[in-house]
Image 1: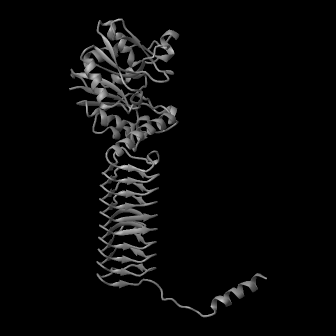
Image 2: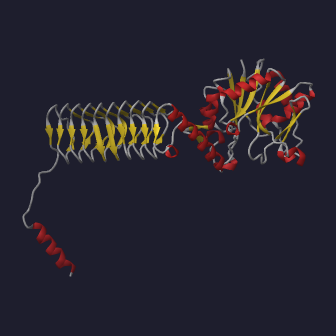
Image 3: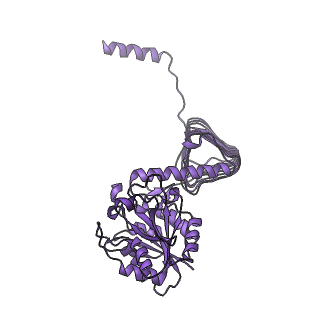
Length: 439
C-alpha cells in the first residue's frame, strides 16, 4: 500500500503569474490534476503539499488531504510537512512534483519495484541538453552515490550525463528520518530533497536510479516550457485518436482536451478545437474551424464548418449543425438541421425539424433563462426570432422573418411580422429629394 506526497506549493514566479504553478492547464486540466490521475492508478494514499493562501489549489486536489508549507524553505522541508498526515504509515512513500505532470503510471511502478531492492530509488533521465539540471553521481556498487545541484557541482560533476528528476521513493520511517536530518548548507540555502540520497548511503543502505524518458520528466517552470509540454500532450492525444479509428485531416491543427472521446470512423477537419467534456460517437464528421465543449454528438451527425457547440449541447444521430451555428444547453433531434447563422440556446428541437438561417432563440430576459421547445417535423423560416418561453408544436411552420412570442399549435402556420406595404414611385421621389438637399 504505497503512498505519494505531491509537492504543489510552487508560486509560478518564472511564469509571471498570480496562478499557482500547479493550476496552469495542460489539455484543459491543471498540471496537478494530470499528476493526480496518474498517481491514483498506483498509490493508495495521497497527500498534497500546498503553499499558504492557495484555496483553488486545495480544491483541485480534492478529495485528497492537503497540508500547508507555511515557509518555502526547500523541497525536503515541503515533503516533511506531510509527516503528520502519514504518521504510523509503514509502507513506501514516493515524493513527486506538480510541475512534473507527465510521469506515466508504469514509470511510477518501476520506481516502486526498484525501491524494494534498495533503501532508496530515484527517477533520473539523460536529456538531450543537460543544461542546469542536478547531476546523479554513480556509486561503485552500480547504484548512485549522491545528487548534486548544478549550482553546487564541480566541472567534473557537471559532465555526468545522468540528471536528477527529483522524484524519490523510500520506506516511510526511513524517509522522514532522513528529511529531518537534511541541512541547508548549499548555494541556495535551501533544504534539498535529494540530499536524502547521501543520507541513505551514510546509513549503509543502497540507493539506485530508475531512468525515465525525457518526455516524461520535463519540468514546467516557464510559459515556454508549458507550451512545449502542451505540444507533447497534444501529439499523444492525436496519436491515440487516430489509433482508435478517427481520421484527422490535418492532425497538427487539431486541439484536444484530456478527456475528448472520439468513436470510430469520425472525421475531424483542420483547426477544430475540443474543450473539456466532449463525446463523439461513430461516423461523425466535424468540419473545419469548429469549436466543441461539454457536448455530445451522436452517430452520423455532421458539424460545421465554423460551428460552435457549448456545454449542454446534444446533437442527435444524423443531425446537421452548419456554418456559424451555435448551440448551448440545446438538443438537436435526430435528423434535424440547423445549417446557417443561428443561435439556439436552452432549446429542444425535435426529430426532423428544420431551422432556417438566422434563427435566434431569445432565452435570456436579463434576469432568468427560459426554454424554447420546437416539435418534431417543424419548419422555422429564415430570420425568425423565438422569444422564450415558447413552444412550437409538431409539424408547425413559422414564416420567415417572424418574431414568435406565443405558442404555436401542432400543424399550424405562424406569422409574426408586420404587413408589407408598397408605395409606387416613392423610391424615386425619395432619391430626388435627397439629391436636392445635398446641393
